Length: 237
Image (cartoon, rainbow, N blue to C red; front, side, top):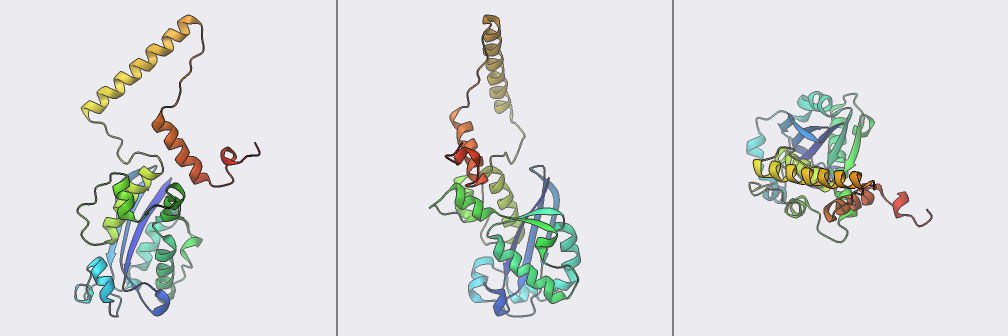
């Protein structure tokens, strides 16, 4: 399964008002493991940048003066994301801006949804944590993802943080390596479980392995992701 985690920075909040994309950051995840492939470009919008936007991302017109325009990077960007599940936080915002940029190039790519499956991580977070703050910063704190180095919003940095948050939020590990202490605990737990199973077999009984509290909590998250049509949450089964 190939996923691309994406974030953009823009000159303002509304593409309909003529605002443009000035940074794109993407990281690739294969089978829930981040690879070393990424796409990161700063883009000259050929217009001014709202002062409020600069306060958020810190990107100035002077910095972007020598950077390529979107048309110069469009083909490389589309090649990087196509045939993937594209994950963004408040995806409608990023995708609308990028679709507008693609249309302005007059290149024959069409809307992003025609060659990517789009997933909104903000919508998922709201289902899992209703009534709570679900900004990327809030989720990073909730799932103990270190973002202390994040002074400003940034396309590539935010895409990297989003990938880690998404994996934690959807029940997967972001790093499957074990230190020595964790390896020891894992081995002890496995040995204890095997001893219990062997004892039950010797008695001729059935082996019953019950989920612990953490496993029940993770299962509940997945049920929430499945939505209202999930059989486990309906009352007619």
